[in-house]
Structures are given as C-alpha cells and as structure tokens.
Length: 396
Image (cartoon, rainbow, N blue to C red; front, side, top):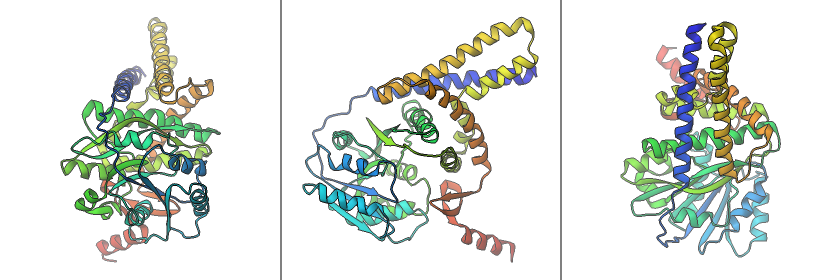
C-alpha cells in the first residue's frame, strides 16, 4: 500500500505540473496579437453537413452574417435527401446578398465521409482560399477577418482554438468540459511548449492550390484524423501551420453520456495511432484520478503521523486542479463556472481513465454507423476488406 501511495503521489505531482504548464501555454497563445497584414483574400467556406446537429440553423446564420468583403458559403451533404439541406435552402432564401451554393451527392471514394463531402465542395469553390468549417461552429462576425489576419508569408494553414458551449444536459456538459480543458490545453501546449502543430479540423483555412500540389484530399480520404494529417503534410512541405488566437465557439447542447464516451473513445483510438508515446502520457493530463487513488491509499494504510500533512497536500492539489480549470474556462467562455461544472470536471476526468484504457484496446472504430478497422496513422479499412486481407495472409 505504501508503494502504491508513493506512485500515486508522484503521478499526481507530475500531472499537476503538466496542468500548470499547459494552462500557461493557453494564456501565452491567447495573449498573442496576430500580425495585421491587411490581407482579406476571397474565401470559400466549405460547410460539410450530415443531419440536423444542435442549433444547426443558428450556426449557419453565424457564417452567413460575417463582416467580410468577399466570401461564399458552400453547403453540402453526401445524401441528397439529408434533412440538413432544407436548412441550407432556407439560409439561401433568407440571405440573398450572400453567395451560397448547395451541393449534394458526394462520391463515396474513401472511407472518411467528411473528406468525400469536402472534395465535392472544393470542386464547386470559386476561390483559392478554402475554409473548412464544421456544422457545430457558431462564429462571431469577425471570424473570417481573424483567420485572414494570420496569413503571414509562409503560412500554409490556419486552425482555431475551439470553445465548447451551449450544453443543456450532462453528456453535452462533459463534452464541452473536455473540449475546454483537455483539447484546448493539448492544442496550445503542443504549439507553445514543443512547437508542434495539432490541427483540429472544425476550422481550417488553406489554399486549394497548395492542397492540390501536396496531393489533394486523396491524401486523407482513408484517414480518420484528416485534420491532423493535413497539418503535418503542410509542415513537411515547408509551410507554417498557424493557430489563431480568435476563440471559436463550437456548440454541443444535447448529447447522452454514452454518446460522449463513444466519441471520446474514437478520438483516443485516433490519437493512439497518430502518436503512441503521447497517448501513453494522456492520463497525466488530469491529476484527479491520482489524487483520489492517493487518498484511498492514505485512508487504508498510511502512518497516522503523516496522514494529516498528506491530507492537506492532497486537498490543496485538488483545489489547485479545479481552480486552474475554472480560471481557464472563465477565460475561454467569459463567465465563471457553475458548481455543477466543477462536479462535471471530476466526473469527466474519472470517466476519461476508462475511456483511455478502452481506446487503447479497441481495434475497430464505428463512425456514423459504419464499422471500420483503424491502423497506423489512423488509416481506415472497411471491416470486410480487413477480414479478406487477414484470410489471405492465413491462406484461408
């Protein structure tokens, strides 16, 4: 028991250091002012749609209402009968002053349905600069200007710091808390602390001509983490990947706890295949499980002479963790956390331990109703193809 207590205390201390370091990285990144080059290139906003997401129409309106001189919206679905197209047509009717194109019926060439949709939308784009914007994004009027402000010489791709918002139930609350802690800390920490670009595909700005030069969307049509891989391809080509300090809301209002867990398992699988060593260190992003483990060990077997001192240290560490997340999320969302949010942080961190372990063992990924096998680099293979290849190797 004493050995387990010592291990849990070491892990909790390491996790607290990482928490403080990544919190500092977020503040550094958000404190930077983008270089104002005065460039406002024409932008084609690609909006891949599938089904009626949370507050979808309000999200679409936020893009149509941009304070930007020259842009167009391209809204598209793989399925021509997708109900999201009705909202797209309504948007086009209510914003006649905005150039809005509606496309449907993307060819299912690759395993990644989002990439299939983006390829179709990009073909219809009138401008060279493409902004991929997910359906959950709720943009402020200066979003396009903020992204364009990052287009310094040598920049090939710009991504955003995302802020989860709009939660109405527990699953959505957990989803947004994870976005506003683990994801934001990871993205900003990777850039500031180790100069590594970690692109989240909900918001990506790049040139179509550059993408074509690198190989086009075909590069990532069979990849789950198309955003991260695209960012790495741009860097390998000698182009810089910039992270905008403009905070971009991403709406998640209604989600079950099961849906939250399934989504996080898929993302864990993705990260495990992209960066195995970083995956192994992910439990250190939250000290809560290690602090609770240390408390359990202390309660069961620590010497009474040390118990009071250690209990005070554990309590202070726990308070520091919650205070750090509370301060960070207040910075991101502009308002203090409610008491239930602090409870949600603890629940989310405890759930993540199981999600992380399960994602490390799971070999298949279910995405939008389709089961596939995931491999190195987050490559996707349909299950029937994976079974056929295995049988061929076994001589069946």
